[in-house]
Image (cartoon, rainbow, N blue to C red; front, side, top):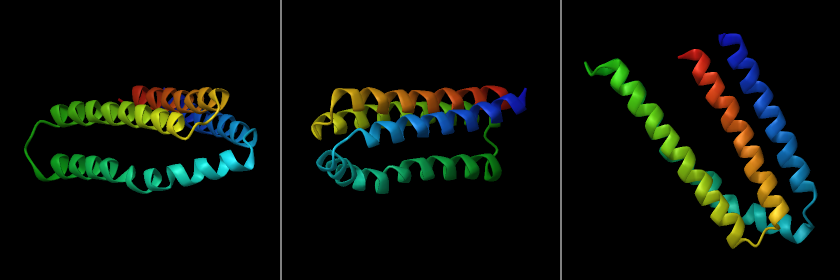
Length: 126
């Protein structure tokens, strides 16, 4: 079953990338410029909470006596919250950048495909 998780994860990443690239190509040069400029700081800073979360998970599971099931449950709960918040912030950013609605839909579809792949991967692993 774990193999299906890995396959689903890889397939979801590839499909998500195709959707994103096709949506990006449909934008005109001004929209592409606004998109890249608008998300530049987001790309840079959005990884910080994720790295802190992963670091805390690793530290708590290896250096403390806290129940590992509790840590894992809290980790995945916070990971889901992180993903939901990032999705909402990305959608708001697209609206603020005045991106076309078809692009917004494709962007969200690509994110949803990725999340389904990641969810299936974690389902098969745990």
